Length: 203
Image (cartoon, rainbow, N blue to C red):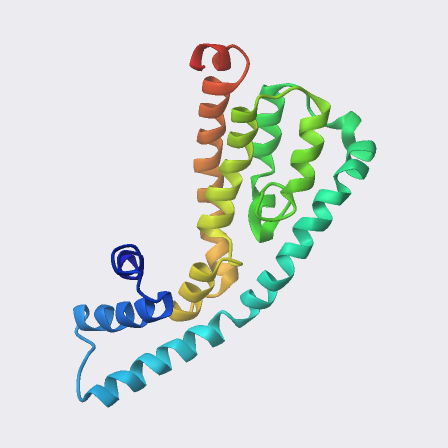
C-alpha cells in the first residue's frame, strides 16, 4: 500500500489510479497475474467488488460516526453533571479503571476517541487537572490496541474475517485476552512514566 503514497508524493499521481496500480503490482508479486490483460482486469474488478461487499456494513457505520462523535461532544457537559462526582481523580485509579474496562474500546465505545470517548475525555478533563500527555496515553491505549488493532468495525479486520471465513465471535474470543494482556502492561508503563511523580521525572 506504499505505492499510491509514493506515486502521489513523487509524481502527484491520482490516488485512485495509484491504488489500481498497487492492486496489479500486488497480484504480479503474488504470482496471480495469469492469462491475458483482460483476464487480469476482470480479476481486479472482482476483487474490488468482493471487498466492497465484505465491508459494506462497515461503511454504513462509518457514515454515521461523525454524527455520533459530534453528539458525544455536545453531551459531555451533561455527562459531567451526572457522573462527574464518581469519576476517578488520581492517575493510578484512572489507569486501573481504564485497564479493567479495556473491552469497552471495542465497537467505538466510551474508551476510544474514534468513538464516543470524546464525552469520557470531556468529563475527565473537568474533574481533575490531569496533564495532556497523561490523558493522551489513557485514550491512546484503547484506541490503538483495542479499536484499531482488534475491533471488527475496522475495515481491515472486517475484510480479514470475510477473507478467512472466520466468525467474529471466534475472533473476539482470541483477541480480547490479548487486548487485556497488552493493555494492562501499557497502563502500568503509562502510570510509571506519566502518572504522579513519574510525570515530573519524565518531563
